[in-house]
Amino acid sequence: MLVSTNYAPEQAGIGPYAAQLAEHWAAQPGWDVHVLAGMPHYPAWRTDPDYRGIWRATEERAGVRVHRRRHTVPPRQTAGRRALYEASILAHGLLVPPRLGGRPDAVVAQLPSLAGGVLGARLARAAGVPFVPVVQDLMGAAAAQSGIRGGDRAAALAGSVERRVLAAATLVGVIHESFTDRVAAMGVAASRIRTVPNWTHIAAPSRPREETRARLGWRRDETIVLHSGNMGLKQGLEVLIGTARLLQEEPLPGKRLRIVLMGDGNQRQHLAQLAAPLPGVELLPPAAEADFPDVLAAADILAVTQRASVLDMSVPSKLTSYFAAGRPVVASVAADGGTAGEVRRSGAGVLVPPEEPAALAAALRTLAAEPAGAASLGAAGRAYATGHLGRTAALARLTALLEEALTLPPVPGRHRTGPRARPRRGIRTGAAPGAARQQGGAA
Image 1 (cartoon, rainbow, N blue to C red):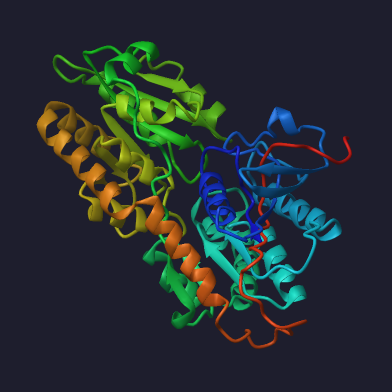
Image 2 (cartoon, rainbow, N blue to C red; image 1 turned 90 degrees about the vertical axis):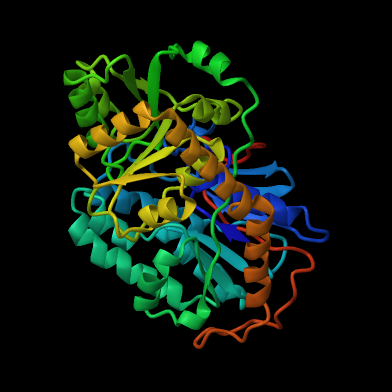
């Protein structure tokens, strides 16, 4: 069983990883995979129109049985609204648990959803089976570092819940080694932590760059700086607006730089207002899944930004897609964080201090003026994605994590209801949002 707050058809964030993992397991002979999920809503933070008014849904997606439960979706992020969001996921999951047709062999949960972690731990405890959380983000650290209103007060509570969830784990997976020390500081023995990196989940570009650029209205004489993904607080995308303002005041000789923000999120309207007077900034909706690889490859520079306070709570999922696109990356992030470490390891880009438009503008000018060097960085990113971020190897690591958990003794304090079975019939999964055949009451 996989529990994840996000699931297909969501195309950004954790959703694609959860879906590809569940579908990989469902393809194994004799494995019966269930997912407990919410309603698709990310990164727009609006419920997908196909799911509005639906309280509960059960659907089949690529051999996976997805059980969806309705929850609140806050259009603007504050600590209180996020708490209500998590509470609604937890309450609906507890009141109407998924019908699995038997006892699961193991339960896997995708964090940072606190509700998903609690639900996963409770389901595993009730069945007396291994519980394996995979840490994609840490919500306690996120509340403290992201700048969300009321975050300082929420951080201690979220961290306390995360500690209880992780304490119930048979093994804990983390997507980056930079998470290990923080997870260990929450009371998890280092011997129970395994690194299971994310993978490149997008297809290779299928159209010529010039064709895609022409369709998007990007001219040949423009350097396109693209940020793709969630427009939230922790991204600190105001730095790109400030950079655009500086580039407008001092343009690059013979070359125009256009900054493109593609995606959605709770800060989109605010960013649109800041960008309105600047001709060098363009906001685009999220690209369709089939077009996404072509759009990334059509850009000249791919940007990742984070607030200066964001250190060890998150490694953006967009990085794997950026590397695969073969374009140079400019990262406006804290030098000691996991994101900076991944950019250094890949050799795919340049690092600049976070929240400093002048430093970012200087880096963009250099990349735009040195196309051969930029191309070399892009080639390094593609090589890194091919050699280290392959889907097959990553899914094999997660499967090995699960199978190892099935061989270990129970966590102290957990009472098993029966003998622990090997995953013959399948792994039952509980996640968040997805879509297909819908059942259940309408509002």
